Length: 471
Image (tube, rainbow, N blue to C red; front, side):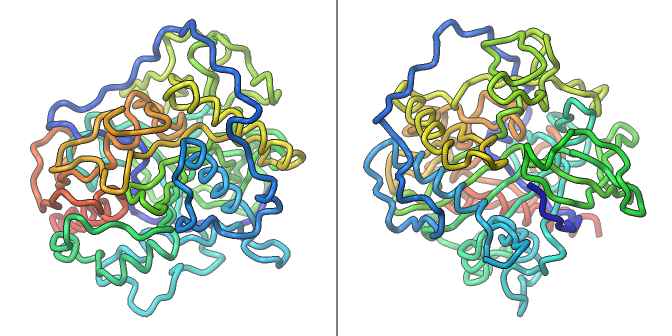
């Protein structure tokens, strides 16, 4: 499935679930070694435990978080699937309509000096599309303005089996936008002064989407190189102008002034939203089935047996001992990856619910590219007063958390699959700083508060501190 969109390049920061951890300076996470194959088989899904409601189809309405039932584990995974289904629906009945998720705003359209002014949501025209950024893993105890493209401890990008960089899109909905504007959160002093217990409103949604290059085009628009055969029939695809990533003097950078016209294939999506009684957000993630095999079944062949598609990120017939390893000396080299914790872990019922939901949704997606995407898991906390990181302390996996306690997306948390979303997305103290790597934090402090759960705002403030520090 292909819909042409020209995507603008923007120098903004995007944070992802599990992408960094709140640890004291100098204790940054290292690349996660893949575990030895686990002997325990996955539980068999129950045919009645948790399934898609037939009333969901055809998909028409936004899943209103105010109506969230909040009664059991299944409710959270059902919300995740309902939201994903709505996000990939056309936004209008007009031919060639953008999908609902493509109508969301770039964070930098509202988070900019002085705010958006009179610019209405989404702050861009249809032909501008969404921003594309190269991914580098995060590290250090601060939200650092330079930790995506500058060399330093923990800076890592993901390279697919074709040797291409994986790109990312950050998006937010109008509820998020209006909340930022109403509270002037594009201003650091407003963020610092807002009450620590202020929550994002119900139906706040933020997304992170990962993409690999399916094909490239020359300056005339003619096809140059095909990396994924018949990509349009296997992936959701979009045309984009992306920055060319290089290593310059040991630094990974996309600030080369070079761009590439490309066809991008969606390989993952974080779906993060606030529902009634859960201001900590539900953190759900989806992946393409051809991304990577489970570590426990390695070595694996060249294709996913259930889809027949080649793995996007796994080197065929390689053992578990060489997976998920990043070499800083050759950062643009192909990396083989596998999934360390299938379905994000949690108890047997949690895993069975995810598997059963995937199976019950599948018939409704048959014959479309969306049949190749699946829910990996979701994580949330125990109640409406249970915001991660009380008094600035980071929340550890399993600490008042429910659902997929080891949740990670193999395309976004490739090298930190041992830390789930709340390891970094919590209500703890953040320092927006112009220093990098393992340097002591310096700069403006954003005290412990519920709004620190989303990194869009603190990352923007970090970028502003970096800009002012360079003047």
